[in-house]
Image (cartoon, rainbow, N blue to C red; front, top):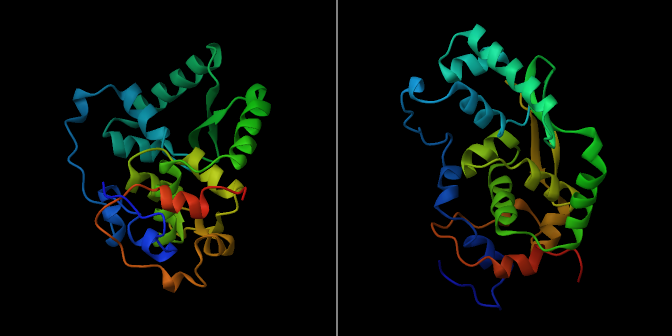
Length: 222
């Protein structure tokens, strides 16, 4: 990583904010990933992994197509997982809603989850949050699933933080999937000292120390 000067301008900071983890942002599609033989992996684990990164309920048919397993097997495993989570002391459960399946925080833990999210408004953004914010800035309007695919991790929690901090907001839905789309806010531009998105610099190939950008937008408290 390269380091940023404390006196770097917002434009210079943003120019250096992206790493190879965001290289796919420049193209129209995410790089194809070589998939191993699906029979070599556990269907239970595979479905859990997929459901960890969805931002909308995933249909049984879609999960069967992705996992390359018979639909009846996928349905059976989903129901087994839902029953397993319901009888265990997990902080989440698996629900069938809106024609698909998705993980949800259990209602009894909602007050503590809400406290965690709200307390995060007083803290500086993490590097993961800054990288996610950069993806949204350069690919907006973009869905959570797209951001997750680019970053390779679940970004639900990070996106909630960015929304609660006023840096990201909803911007309609994706025509093909119905997924919510997100964009940066005018407050985001205000924090980084730009008047419009057209002033965002071209993508840089390296990700430096994000301290300078954190100084610009990472804290709500001056």
